[in-house]
Amino acid sequence: MAEPIPDFTDEGLLPPGDYEVTFEELRESILVAGPESDSPWGEKWDAEWREHLTRQAETMCSHLWEVGIREIYLDGSFTGAKAHPNDIDGYFECDARRVATGELQRELNQIDPKKCWTWDPKERRAYRGYAKKQLPMWHAYRVELYPHYDQFTGITDEYGNPLTFPAAFRKRRRDDEPKGIVKVVPDN
Image (cartoon, rainbow, N blue to C red):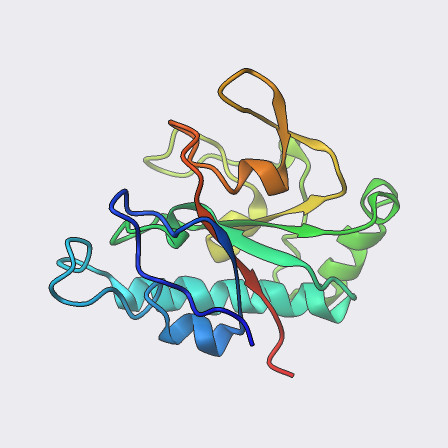
């Protein structure tokens, strides 16, 4: 049995570890339902918005599961104590060949009615009030899921060493504080 998602640390992070959940379990967790009312994090918790983001991520993950991707991780401010996160970030493990040939993107866009699966930086578009341009999947779902096949992310550690997604997503960027991450699995 998987370990349930615990309460946030004093820093507002999930304790270090990988927390495996179904989307039903995610909805019932602190990440969507919110912390206890006496928690320093619970005052303005936007459970409705977090539920919306969860539904969006579930749609995208169902596409990945349909094409055989099983290792999917969610992260970003959604997995921390931010009352109203902007989005959900994450990554999934896959074969580099499927990404390099465009096969994975084609398979996903055949399933997705919004046809928004791409990681091409030229496809990024501005969004009002955001400095960083966003991928089409972010505009469609407010979720960005990146393929991981042992490549570097462009994120570095405190010593300037390049990080892969598994390492980068398990540390807070501003100070390299270790943190937990959520692995989502199908209900069956």
